[in-house]
Length: 310
Image 1: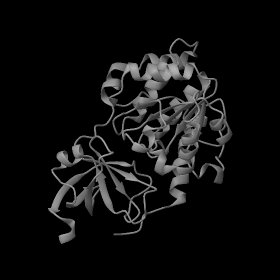
Image 2: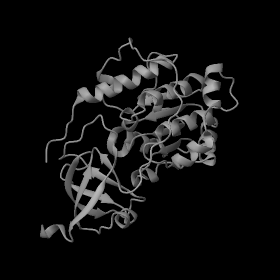
Image 3: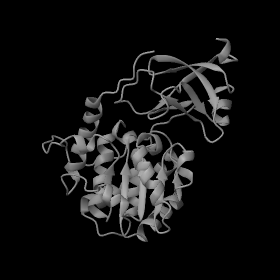
Image 4: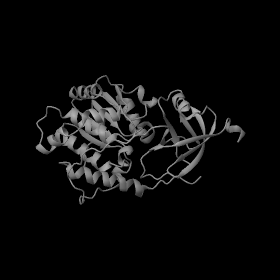
């Protein structure tokens, strides 16, 4: 096992690329949400981050805000995180890799009926909404519920996370986020500890033209999610009973996990709080390139029935 590649340079590069694309479309030179705006918001959507472990301080802030009756929180992610269930009003689950489609659908439903610039209207009219909903595993009713929460609010914030920064389509995602912010009363906040440590250069060669949303990728079979912020001594793969059944493994099995040209060994532990067929892989002890998207297609093999006998 090697050391995790925890390069601030890599994280800064991802953030720079995302922000360059954002500013190419945005009417602002930098997103304007801050901690104080979040603290005063009454509608918050968290998208593209397992925020409880990615940004613990921000999660604690949301936990406090959730106790206010007039604050509504929407959590959108492929993993139904147990830590979020008690503090959210809506969970919108989507398929791994489909973030570009989800952001495009959010733009479509939020901006429906608005007086839009021709270029924005053309982009939204060209979306294959039925395809994006089917492939992302989201639906019209879910987006309408989110829109209703936003419409009833005075201050709205969209919190974006690291899953988006490392997505293969990060630049177009950033442009669509800027399109939303340009045409809707909402503030964007990037949940990254590096935001306040770096200057976003104002010069960029990024084209302001929005691209068509690509066909959404498929993540079939056994998928793992590289999770930050777990206990440093945790070296087990955590998954649901559904994941165990799909991978044909049992609680306590010692397994090999092959992904991205490398193989690691883990003990598998069933977590009854988890749902679905995505397992959580701690990365405190392995080499994972931070510029890679956190969800990985993987091949899992059982090495023996009991990890203690290895």
